[in-house]
Image 1 (cartoon, each protein chain N blue to C red):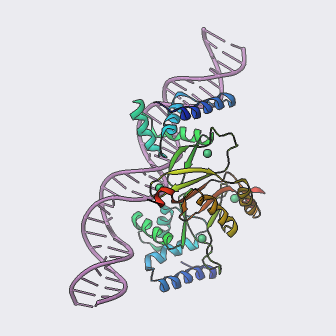
Image 2: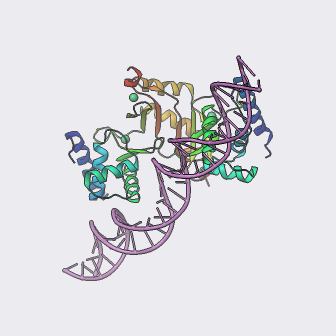
Image 3: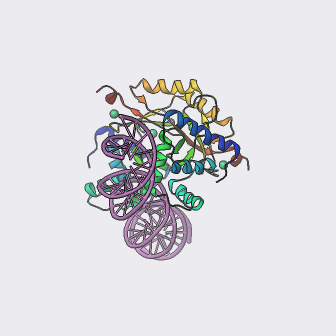
Length: 154
Length: 154
DNA sequence: TAGGATATGTTATAACATAACATTTAGGAT
DNA sequence: ATCCTAAATGTTATGTTATAACATATCCTA
Ligand SMILES: [Zn+2]
Ligand SMILES: [Zn+2]
Ligand SMILES: [Zn+2]
Ligand SMILES: [Zn+2]
């Protein structure tokens, strides 16, 4: 499986981070990551399984797929879109800035997804408005549905 | 099935609104609504089916359940939590103010859910920050996970 | 190189959701 | 009132997403 240069950079970054933190990036996990990095749109778990079979000529069981997706999500390399039950590589792995609260703009027409970071001040206000009620946030993630620029002006 | 006074008010409000707008609130839909209004926590579609069977001694097929949930959601009476695949009655049906962007605080410990409205200015900023990228929002709904006040201070 | 922790394999099944087509019901036009 | 049409519901089957439970393999460390 061939990755473009920027895609390879993402993989390298993850490898480095795993080496540093002690997370185990096994061969299978790396293959799964590679598929997600190369994907042009979010994949369902079973999409991933099909791709894996097609690309590596090797089976990936549902159980394993979910375990690996959990691992990668937990580590922050991958995000899950819970409105569509799909998984995608984080778009901000090779950025300098710290990773912000992920906010996804999901086009309901062409299914393109853009990951943007929520502005700090906005996030703060969101959090403070929430914490007034005694609620403490875990990890907010916003999934916003609508139409992308292309689909708006066809 | 007995509803408390405020619960009955919610149902009445919905009945009135349907009468006004021409939406058809059939007997089955009303029964489904009643269950959701009386529920103390969000229900999965299959929870609803079980309750329906238990309470009305009558079958509700999965197909029908999903169709009714779609209808009620579409009408704005019910919200779906896509992070948990559950449905719940809107908490703001009998409020005076217009319904705001729904924002759910979901306790990952006790599974309590609180529906709050996002402050107008915050919503505006969220939207404008998004629309700069040419994206036009459909109906944003925020689902935020964390710990509720009770579970924070046990 | 033994032993424990972590990861993966395997099988089965649970939980969530929709397709396709038949039948019934509600409400308006004649 | 009767017909007509659209909307709602019934029915059966199946597709899709996700996890349980237990076995085996692999990795790391002492
Ligand atoms: Zn990200
Ligand atoms: Zn689009
Ligand atoms: Zn609401
Ligand atoms: Zn709680």
